[in-house]
Length: 184
Image (cartoon, rainbow, N blue to C red; front, side, top):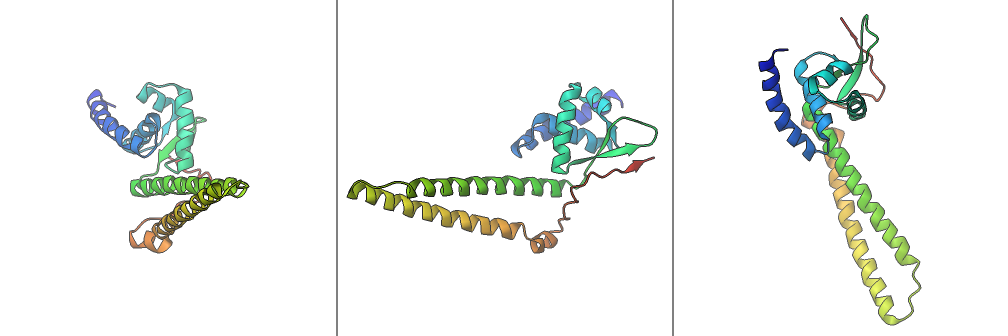
């Protein structure tokens, strides 16, 4: 690859790096994804190390994380014993899946906090009228929060529905099996 082409790619790498950080991807993951995306063909771990000037360990750890997200997949290259990877080019699907995952995680955290608070509250034996009143108010507030959380989960489920996904033209996620594709 020419030095000029690398410089042009590096401009995009820098900007996309900033955007990907907002979606919870670390810098190395973003760089690996963009390098593979712009390459247009599979790359070995060694080639990624050389292109990004980072350690092979860092590339290896982060490429596996990208595999878990469904952003890259390992491919077989005839005549080579090295691990090669290619990129999932449907960026809109990847972004939507990442946003869904983040929302689902936050909703689960809120539900766990509410449930844990309910359990702690139910274990309290009030000693006087003031404490009973405080427990009652706290319980009401937890119930209100639970209603909000349930509404948010309902909106998430609507957003995540197959009907909506079809309406916006989102392809369904591939199965979680490792795909081995022969590259000639």
